[in-house]
Amino acid sequence: MTPLTVAPDATWLMSAYDEYPPRSSVVLLAAGYAWEAVRTPQDLGLATAERLLADRDDRTLLGPVLQSRRSECLYWLIRPGSTADYPDGCQHLGVGNWIAAPCDRALHPDTVRWLHLPEPGILTSAAWLAAALHDTRHPTAGRDQMTHSDDAALIEAAQAPILPLDAHRPEKVSPLLWAEYVEIMSAAPYGKVTPAGAARLEVIYSQAPEILAAGRDLDFTPRRFR
Image 1 (cartoon, rainbow, N blue to C red):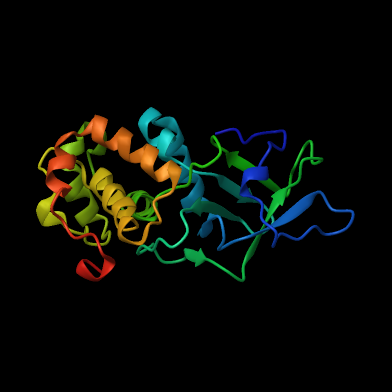
Image 2 (spheres, helix red, strand yellow):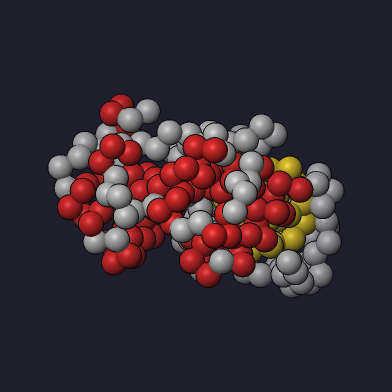
């Protein structure tokens, strides 16, 4: 997996709380506002990123991923306000934390570099990322021969968190897609579905129309499934 060799435009990730060290080729991006982050050990992170980026469908779901060679870790930018059960050694970063990213004048960033920087507005689902990290740490034999319908057994074997409202998940809908759908819909009662979230819902409905009927009468307020 080859990192981006030129610092890409990441202005959509910036906020008024960022810091700019003098005479530095990095900018300190403030977590907890437009996005939050998950810090993972480098070995686990690189193995997970390589697998997700190699899959065309997974790649479309992946938000920005930053590698810090100095601290030997990866930072995954996720939707603000989302939570999940990550493997040991991973840390959720919110308000009060900053991550160093290459600024636009860092033509050949070395200490920190973007492994993946998608279109503006795409942030990773926390539940989806947690499941992917667990999957990497606890691989199941014969995964290459598994289908999406086998994902439930895979997640259980990987000790991923219990899926919210899983009793209502249509049989043909993968657990990862269902977890992402519930996460987006849990923001609806509070009017916090972002334009990117609404657009993602349209994609989900087109991929799995049965989700629309399954979720029509569900109560997505967090107290029901957390």
